[in-house]
Length: 102
Image (cartoon, rainbow, N blue to C red; front, top):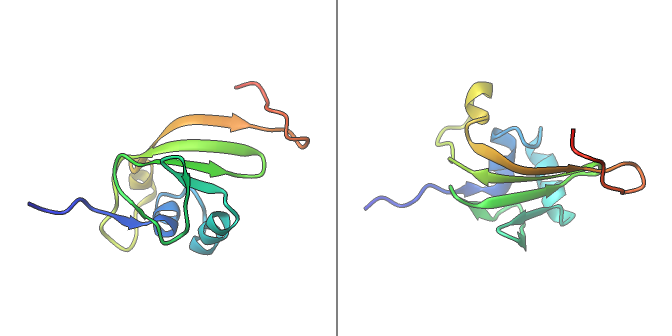
């Protein structure tokens, strides 16, 4: 029986293009801006298909489900979009008030 594929959270965020650079992904994790399945997560946390990630950016909150974990060192832009599915997205103004969808 083969083990389920896993990958470090910071690497997944970079390869999936949810965060542009791995160092930025680590900084976001260190600041408490990323949770996995409802729990605050460090950059070294392993993620696997089915995990739910919530990312807190300054002007938005994004919740995605991990659909796949890449096996290579790089991922094509078209493939990156297939690694996750957006479940929810909320946007905020400069005062932190939630903006209506759209």
